[in-house]
Image (cartoon, rainbow, N blue to C red; front, side, top):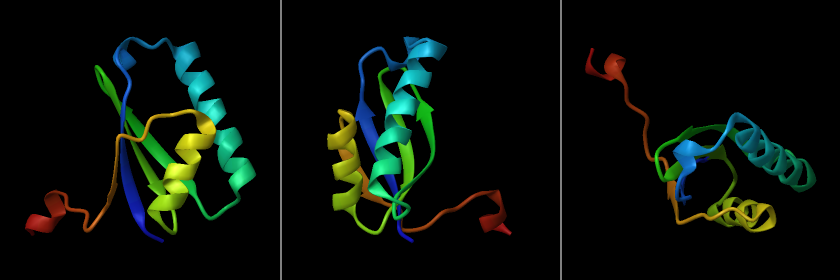
Length: 90
Protein backbone atom coordinates (compact mmCIF):
# COMPACT_ATOMS: atom_id res chain seq x y z
CA UNK A 1 0.00 0.00 0.00
CA UNK A 2 1.35 3.50 -0.78
CA UNK A 3 2.90 5.43 2.10
CA UNK A 4 2.40 9.18 2.55
CA UNK A 5 4.01 11.88 4.65
CA UNK A 6 1.61 14.66 5.64
CA UNK A 7 2.89 18.04 6.79
CA UNK A 8 0.46 19.81 9.10
CA UNK A 9 1.22 23.42 10.01
CA UNK A 10 0.04 23.85 13.59
CA UNK A 11 1.58 26.89 15.32
CA UNK A 12 2.79 25.93 18.78
CA UNK A 13 2.47 22.19 18.12
CA UNK A 14 5.60 21.54 20.18
CA UNK A 15 3.92 23.12 23.20
CA UNK A 16 0.81 20.93 23.08
CA UNK A 17 0.27 19.06 26.33
CA UNK A 18 0.07 15.29 26.57
CA UNK A 19 -3.68 15.66 27.08
CA UNK A 20 -4.04 17.79 23.94
CA UNK A 21 -1.99 15.31 21.89
CA UNK A 22 -4.16 12.50 23.25
CA UNK A 23 -7.32 14.36 22.19
CA UNK A 24 -5.92 14.96 18.68
CA UNK A 25 -4.98 11.28 18.45
CA UNK A 26 -8.43 10.18 19.58
CA UNK A 27 -10.06 12.40 16.96
CA UNK A 28 -7.82 10.96 14.26
CA UNK A 29 -8.49 7.37 15.34
CA UNK A 30 -12.24 8.03 15.41
CA UNK A 31 -12.18 9.29 11.83
CA UNK A 32 -10.00 6.37 10.73
CA UNK A 33 -12.45 3.93 12.32
CA UNK A 34 -15.30 5.42 10.28
CA UNK A 35 -13.26 5.39 7.06
CA UNK A 36 -12.36 1.69 7.26
CA UNK A 37 -9.17 -0.31 7.08
CA UNK A 38 -7.90 1.07 3.76
CA UNK A 39 -6.20 3.99 5.53
CA UNK A 40 -3.82 3.54 8.46
CA UNK A 41 -1.95 6.01 10.65
CA UNK A 42 1.57 4.75 11.35
CA UNK A 43 2.97 7.54 13.57
CA UNK A 44 3.62 11.27 13.74
CA UNK A 45 6.50 13.57 14.60
CA UNK A 46 5.65 16.72 16.56
CA UNK A 47 7.97 19.68 15.99
CA UNK A 48 7.84 23.31 17.08
CA UNK A 49 5.14 24.45 14.64
CA UNK A 50 4.34 21.36 12.56
CA UNK A 51 3.26 17.76 12.86
CA UNK A 52 4.53 15.28 10.27
CA UNK A 53 2.32 12.20 9.96
CA UNK A 54 3.02 8.92 8.19
CA UNK A 55 0.01 7.12 6.72
CA UNK A 56 -0.69 4.12 4.53
CA UNK A 57 -3.52 4.78 2.09
CA UNK A 58 -4.54 3.76 -1.42
CA UNK A 59 -4.40 7.37 -2.64
CA UNK A 60 -3.83 10.99 -1.69
CA UNK A 61 -7.55 11.77 -1.86
CA UNK A 62 -8.22 9.43 1.06
CA UNK A 63 -5.46 11.08 3.12
CA UNK A 64 -6.99 14.49 2.43
CA UNK A 65 -10.49 13.20 3.26
CA UNK A 66 -9.21 12.04 6.65
CA UNK A 67 -7.77 15.50 7.30
CA UNK A 68 -11.02 17.19 6.29
CA UNK A 69 -13.19 14.92 8.42
CA UNK A 70 -10.88 15.35 11.42
CA UNK A 71 -10.54 19.10 11.04
CA UNK A 72 -6.77 18.80 10.61
CA UNK A 73 -4.67 20.83 8.17
CA UNK A 74 -2.92 18.88 5.42
CA UNK A 75 -0.61 21.56 4.05
CA UNK A 76 1.42 19.03 2.10
CA UNK A 77 0.78 15.40 1.22
CA UNK A 78 3.75 13.60 -0.32
CA UNK A 79 3.93 10.07 -1.66
CA UNK A 80 6.99 8.25 -0.30
CA UNK A 81 9.10 7.07 -3.24
CA UNK A 82 11.69 5.16 -1.21
CA UNK A 83 12.91 4.68 2.34
CA UNK A 84 16.61 4.83 3.13
CA UNK A 85 18.56 4.37 6.35
CA UNK A 86 22.14 3.53 7.37
CA UNK A 87 21.70 -0.02 6.05
CA UNK A 88 21.18 1.46 2.56
CA UNK A 89 24.88 2.43 2.58
CA UNK A 90 26.02 -1.17 3.01
